[in-house]
Length: 172
Image 1 (tube, rainbow, N blue to C red):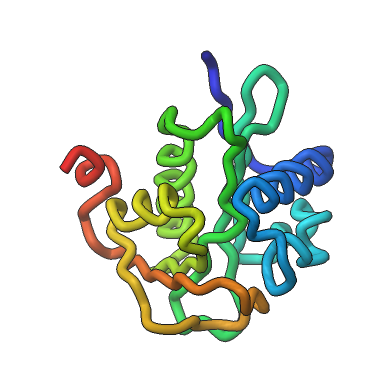
Image 2: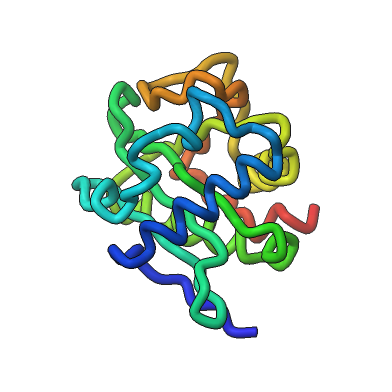
């Protein structure tokens, strides 16, 4: 099965918003203070025109099956960006596509000059959190930055200057 990973296009707005909200309903985290109710979810293309940001989508058979981005969230320390809006369709998970998206986004974050990558998540997304741990993200005791997603209760940070990649740690 051929998967294409490419930059977001304006035509991706609606399918991406639908995918993200479907994942939130699936895990029963469709509540205020999350991406579910964030108005920017409906127009990710224009959001990711922001300097210092990037968003990639995974496409299979012409259909968007996932996406992930890097964004210079307000209030983050200098040299730090946020890994954002990282979602995969249910039937896509477990095939290594999430890891490909994560690694490509970490590479792009480094190319954009970031030294750290921050993320926010939920315990309900345990498989994703496990992947973040294996990729070298470390838990934080509280949120940093001003994402506006006050319902999230897992916060993690990755030092992008480390040489260890997710690929080398996944099998451990």
